[in-house]
Image 1 (spheres, rainbow, N blue to C red):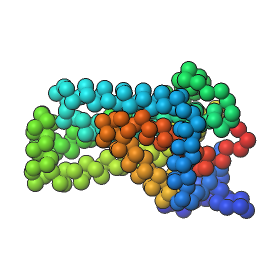
Image 2 (image 1 turned 30 degrees about the horizontal axis):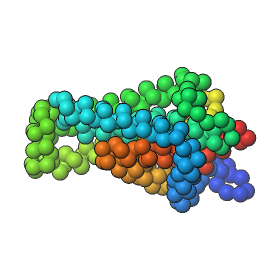
Image 3 (image 1 turned 90 degrees about the vertical axis):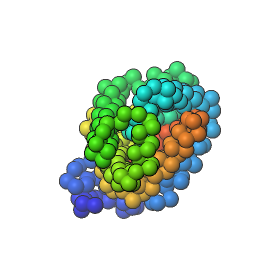
Image 4 (image 1 turned 90 degrees about the horizontal axis):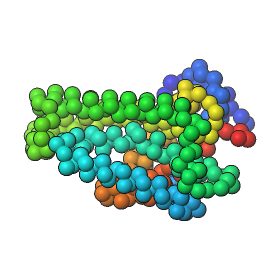
Length: 273
């Protein structure tokens, strides 16, 4: 990690600047135990929100299942794996409803499906910009995956049968998977660093997209060891949700979304707002 220009308060690690960037909101350094506390707090929010949180979990699971089924029934089956991996790029945007639910629970505000569903409107411009950035990274990953496949097998993904035989039953399968995983991991790390704090921050504060992204990146640099573990947990829970034919997403998406709100609360000093 690059050496940081920091200033701290007497109580612990609290960064007001890093790598020459002055932060509007101080970034806190957290401990390795925090991700488990975020998950516990997320589960508590999920339980308290009840049907409201469950509604959005069911909606995400149903849409995800329909998309996967559509690809599976079409000639696009070979693209299913990079598309499934790309889910992790757009997951932070899907968590917007859960961030708002946790915010409302925290502040004791009324909780209903309509208000939560429309909670993005005051921040539409910033969230739209963040969504475009994540979509760009997703599309970049899709294109890179196609190019890597063509480089190893000298052909574009033509059919499901060819894809399976080329990847699982050829000598080029292992290096292809290693290179593809490495490239996908780099892009996923960039997306995670950009969005881990930015999305919930934009839901709470009236700030610009660039400020939110900067804060998110700085929080990641300060807590990179902890957030590697947190990112791994997010991947694990999301993959488990998808592997259960998306049924598990009904629970795992709300859990991750609520927990991500508490991660933001610990990572960024939000003052009295």
